[in-house]
Length: 242
Ligand code: ATP
Ligand code: MG
Image 1 (cartoon, rainbow, N blue to C red):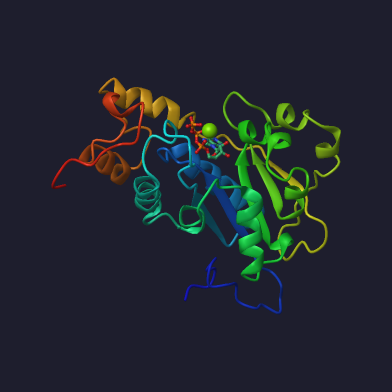
Image 2: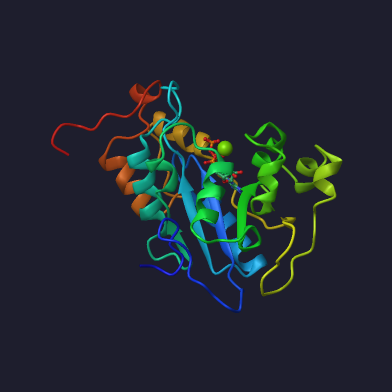
């Protein structure tokens, strides 16, 4: 039983000062930009922990993601091994169908988390699309949203998509529970300019990716021949016997 278990439920804490970061994504593959975003959000909002939640393989969409959920989950686990304050969750990979953030936040709340204890972390590029998300705008009530700047996409640009979003932006209290209505927080950090798309392109071109991902991630990708050109249009296949 771990203190911030998602499926197991959250511990009761009379101080009500728990803060759990949740970083969802395809992580196809995970890279330094994801780790930077998690670290920036964790330190800006004094989060106890950040839970990485790789998405389920979408049904009826064989082209994306490029690696299976099993490999993407393994890559996240390898990336955060020894990375303080981070854990990986199997919440979405275990759940059939499309992975919707609204459902994931609902599962966490069913496990005992209050909306104001949850901090859903996302890059400005992802937040710019928030109005298209499943259960928007209700999804915003399920957790605080933490928007981290991403090279090339400012938070202002993402927030300019709707005045109703701007109205929810608040300054974070340094510690303690932020009970009450959930808010949107801005984190103006400089994360490394890396994308999974760029990594897949490099791998398809047989170029090294060591400057973009932790060493364990690069090793796993190489060992399992992930993201090679022949696999770009479908799921990776394991080499017999590996
Ligand atoms: P792809 O190129 O396949 O879309 P990606 O690099 O954008 O991959 P995702 O798995 O789509 O990675 O991203 C998961 C979350 O992490 C999203 O909210 C995204 O905005 C955020 N993110 C990814 N890279 C960065 C970065 N360098 N800085 C800040 N946020 C990032
Ligand atoms: Mg992306």
